[in-house]
Amino acid sequence: MTAHPSLFAAAGDAKIPLAHRMRPEKLEAFLGQAHLLGPGKPLRETIERGAVGSMVFWGPPGSGKTTLARLLANYTDRAFVPFSAVTEGVPRVREIIKEAKQRQDVEGRGTILFCDEIHRFNKAQQDAFLPWVEEGVITLIGATTENPSFELNSALLSRLRVFVLEPLEPEHIGSIIRSAMECVAGDLPAEAPAPALSDDALALLVRHADGDARRALNTTEAVWEHATSLDSIPENLSADFVESVLERRLARYDKAGEEHFNLISALHKAVRGSDVEGALYWLARMIEGGEDPMYLARRVVRMAAEDIGLADPRALQITLAAKEAYHFLGTPEGELALVEAVIYLATAPKSNRIYQAWGRAQQAAREHPAEPVPKHIRNAPTALMKGLGYGAGYRYDHAEEGHAAGQEYLPETLRGSKWYEPTEQGFEKTVAERIAWWAERKKNP
Image 1 (cartoon, helix red, strand yellow):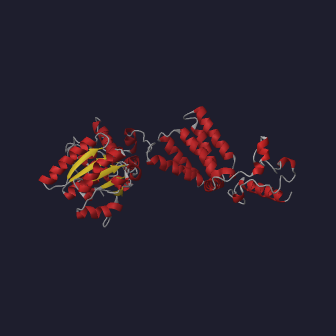
Image 2: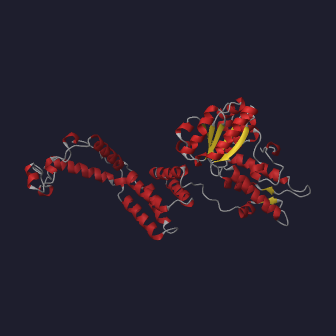
Image 3: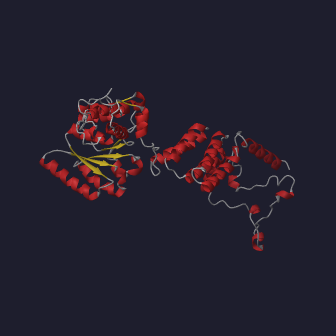
């Protein structure tokens, strides 16, 4: 179901970019975010009551953050003042505050200060909003693609409600594209037939949008402009026609932001979960998105030590070899070495007992930071040290068939501790058998 073009901001003005022409002016034209805007949902109730406080919209590009802010201003009869943290600074904030005060005193009208990309303000600059938000001079609405917990200072964040927006569903993107096609069709002379998208072409545009309404509208506009620029305007726009217009789609990836950590987490967990396809997909997403393959190589080595360990000692060898191979070959040839390593790790037996053992040993070292080394295993290079008992009673393992049965190597308070407990997985089963064998030998010389 498509929304009527009259519900949008400037549907009839062909001189304005399509993404702006199709910005909804009515709440019923806004598609998606049902978890916020459905009946009885928090943001919907806030809008309907007209009790809009300061807030931040956190969501991916094209999910409707700016549009929602404008709708809030429309529904509460407040002035809407846009501000970009990318191109403007604190001096402009002060000007807006001054204007907002005058508007409040003279007109009795509130002001919504919409700060796009609010995460681009550093945490000290964000303090510029604080007193005016508290006094109610402005209602601050921030928009960010980054996690507010990391990007906003705690004082400001405590004064804002955080609403999380999701990428639009395919049916919403499809509805937006169909509405856009109706909108631009009105730009043609009455006698000219309007091109129509085939079902396959529409599906291609929806896939290309990746839940981003702005991308959907920009690509629809590009397809329309190309079609109507031809000497003979086609009546039907096929998937092949659309494909010829679209540029190569880049994977959504931010090497410096939260998405970086989300994707490396997904890769690590897919390897840990022995899912080859999942591991390959997330590896490909990161490489296609421009991640440094040497960063991936280092993380893959870490996975071998953390999640495979002695269940398969070859895992560490293979990942180190993959790192060296990539370093030697570069892109794209060396990427196959990383692929080989990831597949090997995903299919290898798993054990995190080395990781756990190291954590327990570190904890013991923190809890017992000053335990003296037992004298019998201290080095005694001088006569004085020998006189003090260093090395006294030490038994040389190679000299005894039972390998110094009963000799202790831990401080007295820690004797009997068990930090490493091997599993029955892969080679670690052999390691467990070796530990048991040595334990028995040391008990029975």
